Amino acid sequence: MQAQHTYQKPGLGCWLKAVWNKLAEEQEWRGLASEDRHRIAQDMALSDGDLAALVRNGGGSAELEELLARRAAAGKARLAPELLRDMQHNCAFCAERPECRDWLATNESAGAPAFCPNREVLAPQG
Image 1 (cartoon, rainbow, N blue to C red):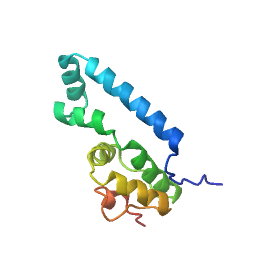
Image 2: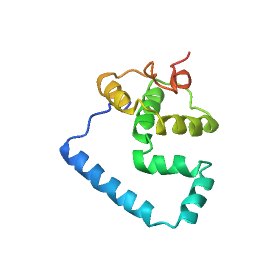
Image 3: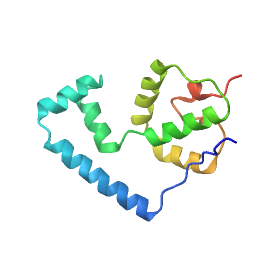
């Protein structure tokens, strides 16, 4: 029996916890020396500005994880690891994340919405 994956909008308690965690992350980020932040960015193959934006805006991993879980539940082949890094980058900097969350909450299909920058990779093929 396969587990059903459905994205649900978080309630108030989840939202408050997320805000609290976000504030703690930002405080920790600001507490790092600039050379440490730069080294972390280099390790992740990101610019300093891109890494700062990720910390500020979050990484989009929940949305990508849900899309990948739906793909796997549909019996599609695993994606090559080298694709995942690009997909994570696309999700992290996607301006459509609120729309993506809404789409996930109202649509249970495998694949991705038309506005998704990873749509071609996630498309349920053969």
